[in-house]
Length: 605
Image (cartoon, rainbow, N blue to C red; front, side):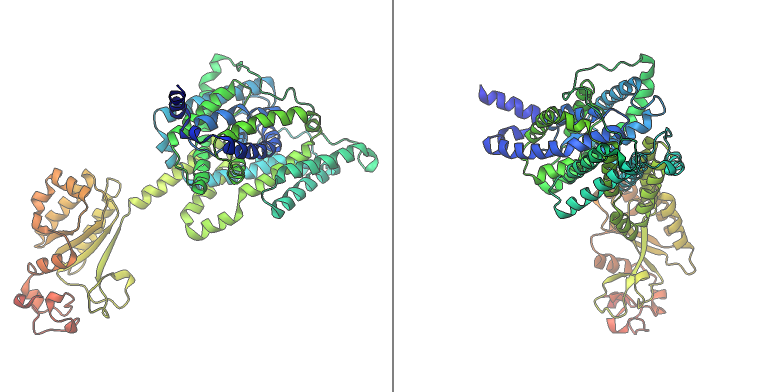
């Protein structure tokens, strides 16, 4: 009976259930305590960023965390509220309702459920590979743009400036600039202390919960300033206030049916953001743990967590890198660490409710500024600019779009730009002229463009290396290049194409080579191929190209190819040739000079 239950649990939850024991439970409990401590300030801060009351950030770190861990693929990923999701949710819902209002909260919960349904469908239909098309550069640009927005929106609370109702980054910055004369010096000091302590603790020991320690320091400073109002500002520093209850209540979102189509469109865009984050974080953690990740199972787990979480007062959640990496480094062995984290979080909130009520808004803003700075990752921007300029520009465009337009459009734009860059790159496969170096008696092939001391080319045989697939998007470039080679003055009539790196062709690509074969024979020459790949040969055989070309025009190695093609060259041209680059032309010592054996086919090596 126990074996049967174990098999059912293994099939439902994963093979990790067999590894659960006293030792693993102790390790998971310790890691879970760290996870609960980490999410305590983050949940409050991220909920504020999403335009929701602070308790919703804590709710989102309880039920979704457990469901995603149990039904997902990764053993170490911890789910919950994240800065990118929070900001994206605020960006799409703020134009529809006042942040924090009853209508806004109901829409946030409804969108969360719809996102969960879409994520679950992606996993069930085994479409997890779609996440591979979300460019890392686009995702990095989106994250950097989100970091800038986090910083911009946190400024008003960090400076204690009230009355800024704008949503756009530019409008918020303008409001902050206009409100500087009304700066609340107490709030500003609290934000500075929170930032300074968080950064100092992080530099001292990355394993310490630096955000939590910074929040405690900022809260202590705010408590002292609020007690000593005579220090220069009679206005108290705003604080969160009491939470309604520590555990997530069951609640069915109350929204009109007519708003579902619009919310579904928003959920689609938010799903892309959440799925991209989830699979990226799962892969990052897996690269450290060595665990294999099943993308479809991961999406199923994330989908279920948002579907169930939406009914338990939780807003959009996904894997959190800020909690997942510490969870792994703290020694977590199974997803039970996430279960412990959720249970311990409820206990912590219950015990510390009066303390949570005294957390100042300025301290939360300070935490958000620290998070924003870490997300911006300037060293990565420098590396990207140095290594690959096109990816740098994609990230930059995505970041700008994230700041200036709707966030769900920004990540779609970044992904589209990445695909366009990829298509442009693959539609221009490299076609390199090959030859030999003058100081190489062994006649190793070399790319002529990269060889300053190259021997002259053969006047009858062109050597061309094909690097890339010839599909419908590349046929125009390939056809133009082949035509240009034929139109050169005194162009060689014979063409040997080295196709070891031509990975794929489609019907349009096959037509290009058929046309080239016809043109080469019309000009009195011929077309030959060296080592075409099996997939290419299959297409050529199906299209009948091999029958037209002839099996004797396909060669397994370069030496055989040149030896056979040499026998088909015009001997009259060979007799007057001064290039003499092939072994068949005569002894290597005569390379580049007239030879007594020039054009004598009987002396070919």
